Image (cartoon, rainbow, N blue to C red; front, side, top):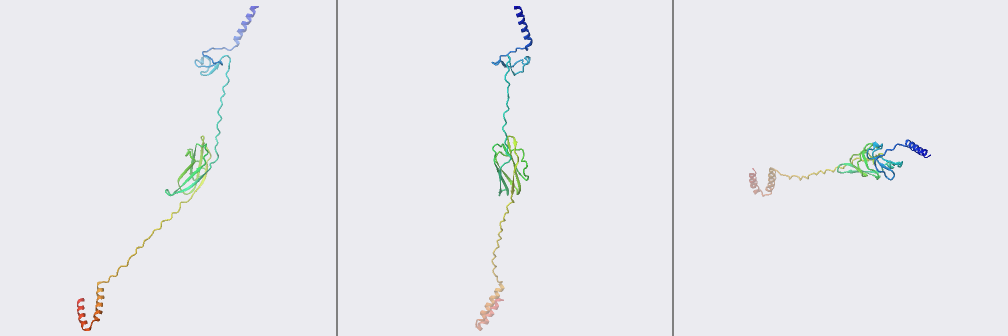
Amino acid sequence: MKLDKLLSLALLFFVGLLLSPTIYAHPGNTASDGCHYCRTNCAKWGEVSGARHCHGGYTPPPVVYYDPTPTPIIIPSSISGSPTVRYDDNTKTYDVYFNWDDWGSSDGWSIEISTSAGSDPGPIVDTTDSSWNFKNIYPGRKYINVKASVNGYWSNVSYWTVDVPSFPTLTPTPTLTLTPTISPSPTITPKAKQTEVKGAQVEREIEEQPKNSRSMVQMIWRWLIR
């Protein structure tokens, strides 16, 4: 009877060994949950180097990786701003100053002034401020085109119409013409005329003399003036 029981137990043990999976032992201590990392000769034991595995039938819970929820990028559809035109007396051209509302979330702005409305100002950030001054601008209709950079994305292009006026007309300074005042030249009586005048005067004086003395004076006068 005992022999039959022993043979039955031996048969069950042998069958159990045949049905159970083959277990290979490999070095390395295990943690409290029966698991550890394979560090050496992992391929020999059928394990992956650096991977954690368990013994004793324990299966660790799967590791679940969660991708962080991306922050939504909010890009306003338009930009608010106002241009100001000022004449520069030094350059004899206009300055167009433009100021716009800063979103606060922008990384910078790309801006241009051109003759095309809504054209792309380009892929480069021109400024991180919310203002820009265009210099040496000539008269005519211009357009200010602006777009914002937000987290590596560009907004739509917003534009403003700017009518730059004609250059101011400069009033020429009047030229003053000075007319010189010329004093009249003094009348110069020729010497012969002077002698003639003086002779006439002497003749009158002779006429006024008594007759006796008149002939004598006339003789002397005529002798002097010859």
